[in-house]
Length: 143
Figure 1 (cartoon, rainbow, N blue to C red):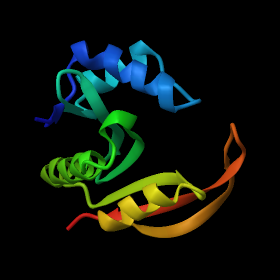
Figure 2: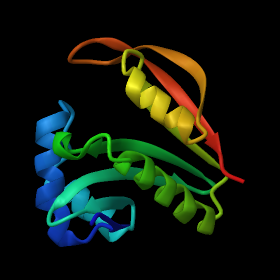
Figure 3: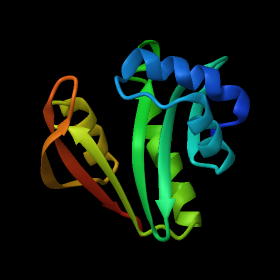
């Protein structure tokens, strides 16, 4: 059974392992601990953390920095549930807009975000490295 909750410090090593496996732009342990302590990391957990979303909030806007689900747990609605849990929490914080960027070629992620109510608002040329690629900025208005 998967549970969804705010991350705690003990989750940091699972988060770092997911980061190493799926991202080329990794943050360090100190960075994650700070975000965990500021309630800006949500996790999906079975025995270990199988997915997480990292975000930031400034006033009434939030930005999703990263969302990842372990390959072994994909296609089980975990990313969708993480985003829905995040949106519910952001509503409680009076957030009105949520932004994210996604690789132009990442069609599955773009479709997931659209399913969660995000709309594509602009292309960002050469936003990503390793490999170099355009990004798509997406927005969800939280009502």
